[in-house]
Length: 405
Image 1 (cartoon, one colour):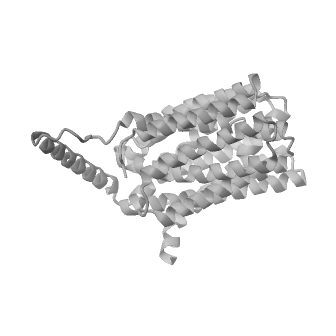
Image 2: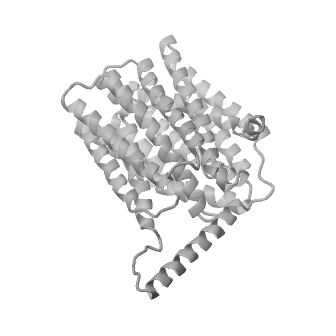
Image 3: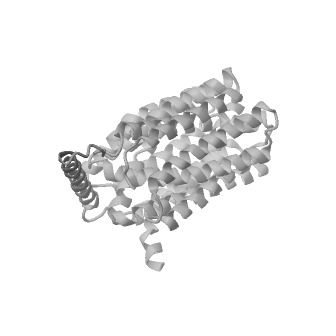
């Protein structure tokens, strides 16, 4: 256990970084509305940032694998975020805030491919599921701490400038910790070995199917499904998640009438559910059918949002029911997310580690605009129904995706 803790010390900077963004994530939409912004302006901001993140993710993934330097891009991400978050304190202009947010988002994503590769190269393939689950659980704890800070600071009555300054200082602390603790791996070969194993397995399945065909057996699927279905499932899942969560703080604040501290509390319950899910996945790594876990998690999220839609239609949606649904959604997301991270390091070649963020970014970018637009023009009832339907479609696509367990 001591060795395991020492082996994860390099992740402490990421923990502090998530504390800052856990606080910032809910604070920003509430802040934008409070200074005269609209759901549409919030959607334009988030959608533009996510669209630009698509080429940025591919670039950061390519450049870190090309140079074999991963630490420097983690440092670039954390330091740039701390500087831009401080710049937020110097303006209250909606247009300036949008520009700052978009620039920060492009620089912020620099650490994502590097983080994924560091975990893949520092641990063996058999430990990937557990390692990704531990990392995501640890950083989700940071996110939860940030949300709890939001509860406290809202009650105390901290100014917007003070909250943004705190977020900036937390990110700078993450930069300093990563500067000391994060090291590039001496050798980079684990993903290459895994890809060789996958090619060998693919060749074996091809030979087996060919042999069966010569014996009169025509069954069998060389790919085990369609890889396009898997990529489509990624995009739809991200689309549904972004469509729902981008305007959700406004639903909790405006439609359910919650004060800022309670909005943070509801999100804290969502984060708590995710933490439980991550550590459950870590403890069960290698003992479960990962593909089945993935498709069941996506279906579960669809059922949960259909439930939220039903409660809203009947006008009986309460804080307690919404909180329970969000907590269970966080749990389901953890089961989905760990499996997708492990899979991406198997199937994505070196130099293209940002492709996972590209596929997810496509859905997120569309959803970040679609969610606020639907909520403002048609209301949250329509938003919930559309989101639940998209989750259901993602579940169907994952059902036809290749077997990658």
